[in-house]
Image (cartoon, rainbow, N blue to C red; front, side):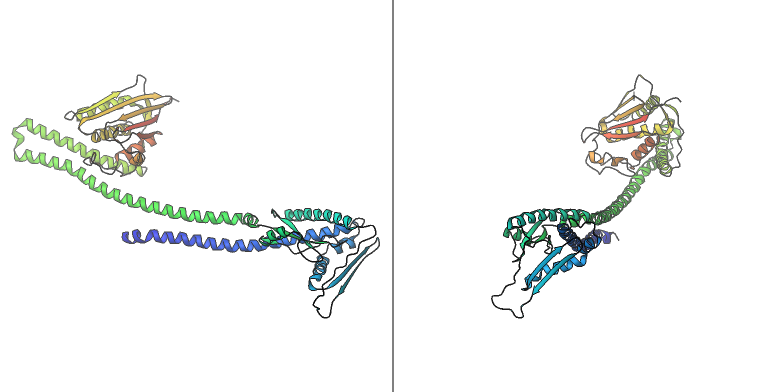
Amino acid sequence: MKWLSNRYTYPLVALAIIASIGLQSAWLIQLFRAQQVQVKRDLDQAVENAARMSEYLSIAPGHENKNNFRNFFLSTEWLQFKQAYTGMHHLGISSRFESDIKDDSTRISITLRIANQRSGRSKARVISMFDDGETIESIKAADKKDLRRMDSLVRLECRRQNIQVKGFHLLYDYKTGKPESKEIWARARTADYQSRHFGYNLNFFIHTYQFVVPSITEVVLYRMRYYLVSSLLMILLTGLAFWFLFKVMRSQRLYTDARLAFTGNMTHELKTPVAVIEAALDAITRYQLMNDPVKLENYITISKSEIKRLNLMIDKVLNLEQLDNGEINLRPELYDVQQGLESVVSSMRLRNTAKNVIIHYFPSEEPCFVDGDPMHLTNVFYNLIDNGIKYSGPEALITLTCEPADDRIIVTVQDNGPGIPKMYHNRIFERFFRIPENLDIHTVKGTGLGLHYVKQIIMKHGGNITVSGEPGTGSLFIINLPAYHEI
C-alpha cells in the first residue's frame, strides 16, 4: 500500500486536477461562444431600435400625438419592409421612394423597376428628388445632424441592453453601396461585430449606417463574471481539498514514524533504569552486601533513584495521555513562581552534583504570583531545565530569570547547548517530534513528549511559550503567564 501511494498518488491527483481544469475550461469556452452570439443579437436589437426611432424622429415633428402614425413607423414590420427596400438596389433594381406627410394622412409611394434580363452595361438607378428650397448642401447638413442623432440613439440603446462597448459607425453611399472611408472599412473588416446596413432618415437617402464594434470580449467576460468566479473557486477548492488530503497523509506518516521512534526511545529509556536496578540487586545478592552496610546503602540509593526516574517517565506518558483526552483538571491556587523555581533549581543542583553543571537563577525583587497548579507548573520548570542540561553537553550552563511585566509573569530558561534551527521553533512543541539527529545531539535520548506537555500545561494556564536562538548560540525559552489578581 505504501508502494502504491508513493508511486501513483501524486500522478493520479495531478491527473484529477488537470481533468477538472480541462472540463471547466471546455465548459467556459462553450459558454463564451454562446455569450458572443447573445451579445451580437443584443447589439443587432439595439441598432435596429435606434434606426427605427431615428427614422421616426426624422418625420415625427407635428405628428407626435397621432397614435396610428407612431405605431406604424415604430413597428417591426415597417422596419423590415424599409430594410428590404433599402437593399433592393443591390439586386440591380431601380427604385423610387416618395413620401407625402400631411395632418390627416401620410402617403408613401414606392416604385420598383425590374429589368426582364440583365444587360452588360445596365446598372441600378436610384433617383433622388428634393423638396422645393432644398439644396445638396442643406441636405448634407441635415444628414450630419441625423447621423449624430443616430449615434446618440445607438449608445442609448446599448446602455438599455446593458452593453458597454466602444464602437464606431461606418457610412456607405446609398447609390453605390461603397464605404465612405476605406480606412474605416479596413478596420471594420477585422472587428468582432458589424451590424446590418440601416437607413436613419425617411426624408432623403444619402447614406446607410453600419455600427461596428472592434471587440466584444470585455462585454462577454463581464457577463460571464459569476461563471468565471465559480469555476475558479471550484478549481481552487479542488486543489485545496487535495492539498489538505496530502497534508493529512503526510501528518499521518510523520505521526506513525514519530510513534515508532517514540516506542524505540521509550524502550531504551525504560530499559536503562531496569538494567541498573537489576545490576544493583544482582550485586547485592552475589557479593552478599548485607555484610557491607556502606556499599549496600549505596546500591539501594542508586536503585531508588532509578525507580524514581522510571516513575517520572511513566507519569509523563500518563499525564500527556490524560491531557490530550481532557482528563487532567488543573487545581489552581495562589502559586509563587519564584519559590517553585528555587525548589526545582535546588533539586537539579543536587541531582547533578557529580556533573559539571552550573545553574544561575536570578529572581525578581518583586513578587511573582500566578493562579496555577503547583504540581504541573513545577513539572514544566523541571522539564525545561532538564532538557537544557541534557542538550548542553558536559559544560552545561543554565540561566533562569523571573520578573513581572505589567499584568504578566515572564520566566526565561536559557542554555548553552547547540541551539535549535529556526525552522523547528514551532515544531519542537509537537507530540513525539524530535529534531533530526546531528553530531551535537545524536547521543541524547528522549521521548519527544516533554516540550509538548510543557506547551499544553502553559496554554491551559492561559499563557504561551516561545523559543528563540540559532544553532551555536544555545536556546532561550520564554514563558508568559497571566499574573494573579485578587477579585
